[in-house]
Amino acid sequence: MTATPSSLQRLHLIAVGGSIMHNLALALHQRGAQVTGSDDEIFEPAKSRLATAGLLPVTEGWFPEKITQDLDAVIVGMHARPDNPELLRAQELGLRVYSFPEFIYEASRNKQRVVIGGSHGKTSITSLILHVLRYHQRQFDYAVGAQLEGFELMVQLTDDAPIIIIEGDEYLSSPIDRRPKFHLYQHHIGVISGISWDHINVFPTEEIYREQFKIFAEMTPKAGTLIYDQDDEQVQLVTVPSNPDVTYIGYGPHEHVIREGKTFLITKKDDEVPVKVFGEHNLRNISAAKEVCKQLGIKGKDFYEALGSFKGAARRLELVREGEDSVVYKDFAHAPSKLKATATAFKKQYPKRKLVACLELHTFSSLNPAFLPQYAHTFDTPDVAVVYFNPHVLEHKRLPPLPPEAVQQAFQRPDLHVFTDSRQLAEFLHAQNWQNANLLMMTSGTFDGLDLTQLATEVTK
Image 1 (cartoon, rainbow, N blue to C red):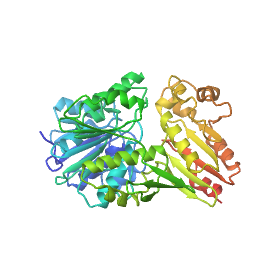
Image 2: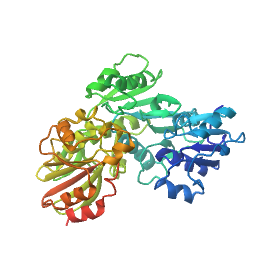
Image 3: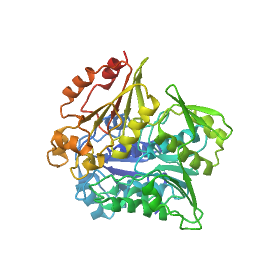
Image 4: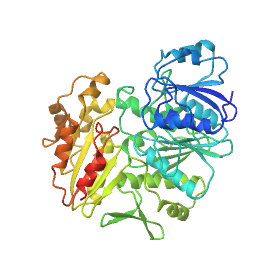
């Protein structure tokens, strides 16, 4: 059965509160489908968005009685467990059960599928492509993991769009499907932006992790295209041009110049194009997006025209506040490679200013004692380096206690400041001399509710 958005009218989403799952629920609801869902915890902004659409479950929890033969299909999110009562009931009734990537594939069978993979950069590359396509009024569907400026939802599925742009996460598809998500989309155009070991809880070695990208590369079909970072050593191991029927396109950082804290791209015609994003990693992201857009029929001059108004993806090196001699940015960076790239980019952009950088260890990998040594010397660039983590998160993830000394040792920076209390962290940051100094806050969490707006106001006075 092919799951076009219009053919399945009664759908139930298990773990509907997830970041991408609630967006899928809203997208399907907008299409006129009858959508229900369940979850044991639903946080903002998903809670308010589902409530506004009339899709918020009346009671949090799992209710097998919601699963009936009347449903056309059930979609299960990664947050659910294999023994989820609703999932077991759906299996018992023989209902069609999709993971998120399975459903996206079925809904886009008749479209050209562009899948952006990589340990880092995939959200930014996807965002760039969507921005350019929208600027030039092209028809397209999409599924992306971050909220983008000008886009109400993170998922769009229509019957008419000829292409779909998908952020290809390498994490597992569902609690009953242990395949990486990006293996299920069956791309026509694939991108690998970089490979840096992550998700230690499901890929216990670097080799196993890298193998997932090799499988993705080898899935590129006849007449397909694989676009990859030609300077990344790990990527080079998996993107060997071995299939004569596949077009392989390598890319590097876009040629550019930095003047007074501003970055300008240099085009083949020696024109200078000012951009609002910066750093070598973002210059690589721009090159990747440009290659994809070229495959989709967007000419170079049209790409640069659209790029001028691109502000970046939410939480990806996002400007919080700017003063006369200081700026405050927040970034989603948490993996070692992202941490190093972002801090280095910041220092190159503002070489004459002191850099205070603060990282929150929040993910399973970043808090795992077996993975922590991967952070060695990745935080050497900032003038003042700070690491924060909440011991309660360790308990929640069932990880052993983490002594601050162990963190300092793993980073191999003796002057590293380590905090486990967000109030003490805030006091430390407020006490810094912010004259001719920048602040960079990096996390996939929230620093336990730290008021970044207030802090940014203090910094940029």
